Every structure is written in C-alpha cells, then in structure tokens.
Figure (spheres, rainbow, N blue to C red):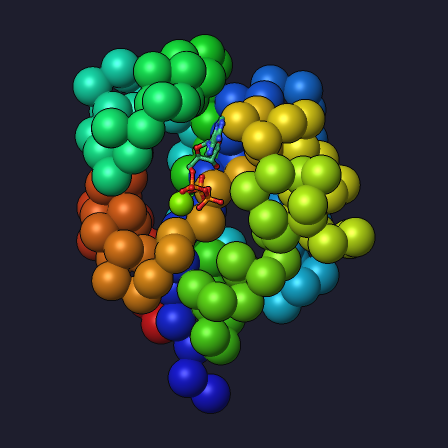
Length: 141
Ligand code: ATP
Ligand code: MG
C-alpha cells in the first residue's frame, strides 16, 4: 500500500456551526485516516500567508476576513492517492457546482464560506502540513 498525506482545514463556517464531527466522519467513510489534528484561530498574517497565492485576487481581503473570523481545524489526512482523492471528495469550490454527496455540496454555505480546504498538489500538501504541524505531531507512516 502506498499511502500519502494531505492537508485539510475545516473552515470557520463549518467549525463554528458544529459540523466538524460530521465532516470528519464523512472523510473517514471515504477512506481517510486522521494522523494529526488541531484547533487554531488564524491571525491575519497567518491567513494572508496561507492563501498568499491568491493575494492579487479581488476576493482576497474577504477570504482573509472569513478565515480569521473564528477557529478552524487543520487536519493531516492519510490514504492511498490522498491529494487527488480528497479534492474529489470535497467537490467544486462553489457548492452550487459541487457534485452531490461531496463535502461542499453537503456542508458549504457559499463559494467563499465553503466549509473545507484541501491541498491541490503533493508539493503544496507538504508545504501546508509544515505550515500547521511540527514533524513530531504527525503519526509515523
Ligand atoms: P481551497 O484552496 O480553500 O481548498 P479551492 O482550491 O477549491 O479552495 P481556490 O481557488 O484555491 O479554491 O480559492 C481559495 C478559497 O478562496 C476558496 O475555497 C474560497 O473560500 C475562496 N474563493 C475562491 N474563489 C472565490 C470567489 N470568486 N469569491 C469568493 N471567495 C472565493
Ligand atoms: Mg486552493
């Protein structure tokens, strides 16, 4: 078995409305295991750094506002082919376009308040995991 790790974040909308447990159960049913987890209220600097790739986008200021509006839950998830499998399980950015049964179709409020983040490449997964977790916090493979 060739398992890999990816990063998810249960965003402040979903965490604040008590959906974290439902979302984790959904991800476990889809074959992912939690190998590290935290609850964290991002600072402005942290949210801007995490989404730095979007800093020129018109929605950047609003995204930072949203991501700092309350605590969120960063989680390292492990399974075979974790990065693409998680992107499939979370669904499209806009819940109106997300496939039925995906996390965003089930739990997201809007294109911005869309319940969950997932890394978009293996390289970004390791960068994003290091953003939130020290090496010792992740269960060994
Ligand atoms: P994420 O990176 O959080 O997993 P994603 O990869 O599906 O989401 P991105 O294009 O990377 O989507 O956008 C990052 C986040 O910025 C989105 O998840 C959403 O919260 C917000 N966002 C993206 N596009 C818009 C938009 N047009 N209007 C408002 N918010 C947006
Ligand atoms: Mg993205």
